[in-house]
Figure 1 (tube, rainbow, N blue to C red):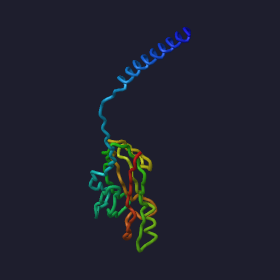
Figure 2 (spheres, rainbow, N blue to C red):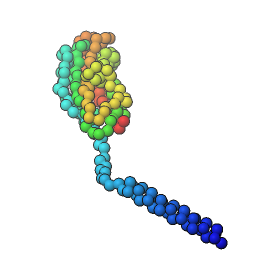
Figure 3 (spheres, rainbow, N blue to C red):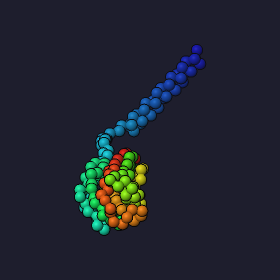
Figure 4 (spheres, one colour):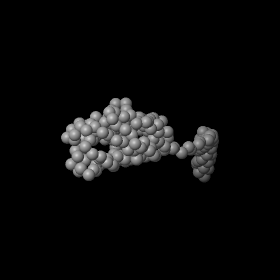
Length: 190
C-alpha cells in the first residue's frame, strides 16, 4: 500500500510539474502573440491617357484640311491633301500611364488606307504608293500589339502618312479620296 501511495504522490508531482510548465509556456507564448498595429488597403488605379497631340508636320505640298481628334483610345477623322509624290503628314502624341498598374497594348488596329476616285487605276496606283505607320519617336520602331508601358511612364508616338514615288504619276491627275485612316489602340493591365 505504501508503494501505491508513493507512486500516486510521484505521479501527482509529475502532473503538477507538467501543468506548471505548460502554464509558464502558455504565458510566454501568449505574450509573444500579442500583436497590435494597423493596415490600410489602397486600391490600385489603371489610367492610360493619350495627350499632347501636335499640329501636323507637313512635308512637300501636303496640306491639312481637318485636324485629327485624339480620344481615349483612338486617333480619327483627320483629312489631308497630297498633290505630288513626296508629300507626307505626321502627328506626334504622348501616351501616359498615370495609374499604379503596368499596362500593355491589348488592341491595336491601324487602318489600311483605302483609295477611291473616278479613275480607279490612278486610285489603285496612289494607294500602292502610300505608307501609313505608327512608330515610337525615341527609336523609330513600329508600335506593336503587346508593347508594355510601366506605371508612371510615358512614350511619344508618331503617326505618319506618306505618298512615296512609285507607280502613280508624280503629279496627281485627279482627286483620290483616302479613307480608313483611323487608329485604335487600347491598353490593358499587364
